[in-house]
Structures are given as C-alpha cells and as structure tokens.
Image (cartoon, rainbow, N blue to C red; front, side, top):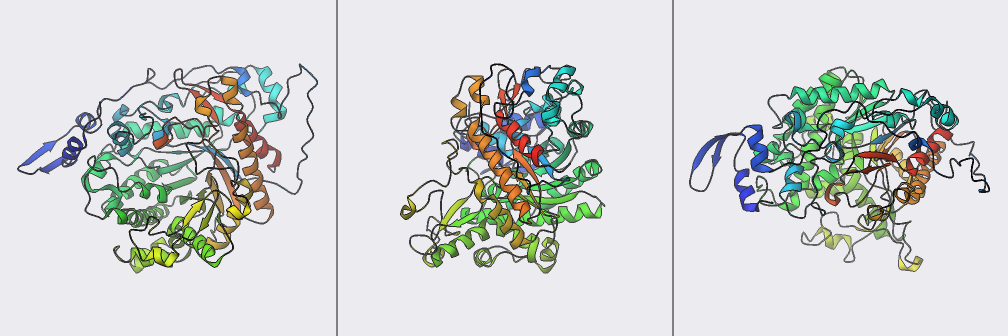
Length: 592
C-alpha cells in the first residue's frame, strides 16, 4: 500500500530527534530506527536467505565460452574466418580491467543489520510510478548475503580452459569458493562497488553502525583474497533519508560536513586496503534528480530550476574537502569523482551547432571538470547563469577545488549529436521558460535528414532510447578528455555497457545468455580504447557496467545491463556471452 503525499509530507516535518512544527502545534518526537523505517518507508520485503552464504555450488559448464571463442569437439563442420590480432594494439601491464555495481541496485537486505532508509527506499515504496515497474531494492540481487556464494569445480575444468582464461589469478577453478571468485574466474582485476552511506550512519550522521562497517570490511578482504582489487564509491545516489528530511540533502551546505564525516570514517577504516576511492557517482545525474517529488520529503524554498545547481555547488565543495581530507590522512589511494557523458558531435558544421557542442560540454562535464582539473571555477556559459543565485565560490574554495582529483574517471556509454535550439541560442538563454533553458542545446542520436536520418548506431532496449552503440567515437572522446582537462593520472573509464534489446522479455535461458548486441558493444568499445591508447591517450582502465543484472533505478528490472544473468526466483547467476567477449579482448591485448 502506498501512502498519500500529504501523509509523507506531514512525516517529513519531523526530525529524527527534536522539535516538529505543524500548523497548530509544536511537539517533540524521538524515533527509533525501526519507527523511522515504518513511518517513512513501510513494510520491507525480505529474502529467504538473510545470512551470509558460505557454500552454493556453481555448475562447471558455466565457464565454457560462447561459440566464436570456443567450439565443442562435436559436432564438427562449423567454419569461421580468422580474425587476426592487431599487433600495434596493447593494454599496458597495469591497466585496470574490471566490472562495476552499486549498493542500492544489488545488495538488498534493505533494513538488515542496522541499515537506515535512503531516499530511494521512499521513492520506490511511496511514490507511485517513480520506478516504472513498481519494484523496490528490498531484495534486488541479495548480494549483501550472496557475495560469498561458493564456486566448486573439478581439476579437469581448470585444465580444459587454461589456454583460454589462464592468468596469475586463475590457477585452478576448484580453489574458488566465493561469489567474488566469479569475477576472478574471468580474469577480472578490479571490482568497483559503492558503499551504502545509510549502512554506516543509519541517520546519515551521529552513531556509526559497526555491523555495516564489518560487512564491507569482509567484502574488501574477500576481493583481496582472490586477487581482485576493490574500488569504492562513497556515494552512488542512495542518500540517507534523514539528511533529506532534516535539511534538504544536497540542497543545503549542511550536507558538506556530514559527507566529510562519512568519508573520514570510510577512509580511516578501509584506506589501507583500497587503492581507488570515488567520492560521487555522476553528479550531473544525481543533482538532476532535484527537485524530488513533492510531498514525500522536506520541502525546499529554492526555485525548482535552480535546485540542480545548489546541489552541484555543495557536491563540488564536499568532494574537494573529502579529497584533501584523504591526503591529510596520508592515504596512498587515488581519489576522484566520476562524471558521465559521451562524445559530442555537431549535427551540422554550422557555427551555431559548433557553439551548441561547446555548451553541451560545458553544462555536462565542464561544470565539474573545469573547477577540478583546470582553475577552480565554472565554465563561462554556466557561470553566467548560476552567478545570478549561487554564492560566489571563494578564493579558498577555488584553490581547494583546483587539482582535487588524481585521475579523470568517466562513465562513457554512448555519443550524441548536438545542435542549437530552433529559436537560436541567444533567444533561449534569454527566456527562462524555454524548454531547453538553461543549457540551450538540442540533442539527438540520429544523423540529419540531409545525411539520411540514420541512427548513430544500433539501438539498445527501447526502454533506454538514449543508448546506441557508438563505439567508433570512443577514441575521439578519450582524446577530447585528455586534451581539454589534462588529467595528471590519466583516464579511467568507470562505466560502459549496453542494454540488450528486449532481454527482459526473453524466457529461454540459452537465448538470454547469447547476448550478441551487448557482445559486439563490448568488443567494439574495448577496441576503441586500444585505438586511443595506440594514439597516445593515457587510458588507465576500463570498468564494465554491470557485474550482474540489477535494479536499473527508475526502469526497475525492465532493462538488463548485466554481464551475468540472474534468476530472481533462485538468485542463481549465469555468465552471458558478453562477459567472455569482454574478457577475451583484454586477454588478447594485455601486455604480460
């Protein structure tokens, strides 16, 4: 049952411990964590498995590569042309090859072991249609308990596939006894995952939940046990609900010290075992969630159109302070935040469209990258808008922002064409009611009619219409990032992936696992990175999205990005063909 907006708005008037002000009364309330869950979120689903699993066998045949990479000895007769290796391509020896996930999308165990609610628990439980499938992250992949799922194989399996997947990590498949070994078994070097802030601080600040810290400590240790490097994102959108209800979350500068204390706790506990920390995931997207649906959270008096930029400035300052905190703690880990966006192609060679492309860079990546990598301040086109309402960044804040990232982390799924508004850029900038204001750029994935109107590349699932295979633009994107923002530590591609068309509608396991569009995407993307590296671009790693089918935020489980299929009834995992193709390109071109 979903509560009405009015009910949730009334609840949002209350602080966790303190004074609540209504229309006609003032009352002091104290809520336990259980009360907080019950009042704000409601009933939570629980998985049948709610303790950490230590032994669940995985069939040996799950590691057999798909046709094209491996053919069984019988039947014979199939023939395919040889695909020669390009000897001028190579991934460096220390290239970060990995996969990614995010806490709310995979963990489940929504309120277990002292975890507090996040805004996504409210969005999925209380706001009708916010997740189009009306699904929640209550159980998801139940990875909170299944990360130690066992993998058992016989010696002959190791011998059978040694020539295909042998590496320093993989000696004998029979030795792998935990779920993270499913990553190691594919030769993957890095697992990038996020920590749920509300598992560490159930109310966003205050008392630390030691059970939450112990869980992530064990995840990190399990990764290291199997030769997989953990990379941690501190904030992947699941803001503790109490911070949103208390002061408006990222819209308030009060967010900054709370995030800093959370970062201090993570850095102090895990800094000696983790080599990469990411402060924020895709700030353009998370700040774009504001304004949140009315009536379910604390109301804000900030105009709706301005809220993403209040969020953005608080996020930038929080990031820079966390970066310098990590350095003051003498962490040797690389610290950054990760941006998102593809290569921006002018729809025509007109001056107006070229200017639109520059505005697209400024308002998507540049808003964050220019302050952090160049000079501590916003791009000119952005600053001309935000200076009308945001406090001016101080000289001290600009100095702290400048250089506050050790490498450029970027989520790079696809590319798009950009053009000026039909009414012209100047007219759009001058009209706050224009549908394209304040960015004032048009975006499309189709060539202009004069060039046939063709799509940029093969389409992904119809439920993600923005995503097309555009891997031939990967070298240009990498080159643009390096030439424009000159990151001293190189470029780490932290997410890239593809939603296989209509995969959620498939019912036969063999059809699901042979994901040819996604396989072609990963092969093409990795080859695009090889071209970029051969051209001299300093690409230091590639982390594929995603490790496993998961709850894709507002799309629920209706679209699939996973390199592994999940049967949500049994929680069994199966490798898809794309995982083998992804690993194959790396293995073929990795310098030994």
